[in-house]
Length: 282
Ligand SMILES: [Zn+2]
Ligand SMILES: [Zn+2]
Image (cartoon, rainbow, N blue to C red; front, side, top):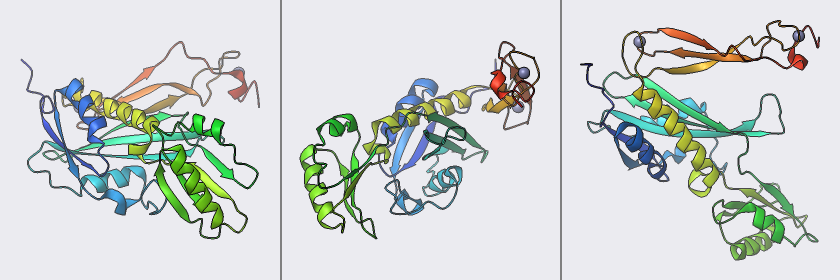
């Protein structure tokens, strides 16, 4: 018989402001038969997605700071999540939404990280001026019912007139109000990135929670502690034409956070595009 698994059937507490428990709890129940208690706390002081309070640390640091905000109350671990939108490192015109869900184990004090990303986040932006009142097509694409928007006046302060806007009527009146505050008569409408108002972001958070729960479930093949998972991709995929090693991904490194044991899993079939090869395309 193997030793009992510390996370199976365990109780966790989630530090959240806007009910991310509805996203994360079902995943932990399915994978670990775990119970996630949502603890409402004001995480806004650590930065907000409407841009009103800038975030100071990295998303990982911010998630750790959120986890430290709540009383563990005897739970096995404290969960927190944090996301970001940033330009794709290779294709700056593409926006990447990255979500982290972390667990700080209250017994071992070890921190485990689950992550997921999307290169198709629902982030729209449109400036509405005087002869640009036909918003019908744009509003249909904006999918207001599941993705709210923020309306600002284009002025020196970029005055926020309304946030969390989810109806066409509310949008029209907010645009009118914003235009009246703008010297050029222009209102800016952008997607509201806050998770409870952005269904696409919630999907990515659920994938990050799944990545974390799967990681917590897997045991290290060497020491049998839970938390065995990937720590990053390995470069070196051979060029399809000449076979030279390139900087393109070739597999994954798996590691144990408890004993440090690691293993490289190389994808032997993987070949790199010759356009990325320093011999074929110097
Ligand atoms: Zn280990
Ligand atoms: Zn080559």
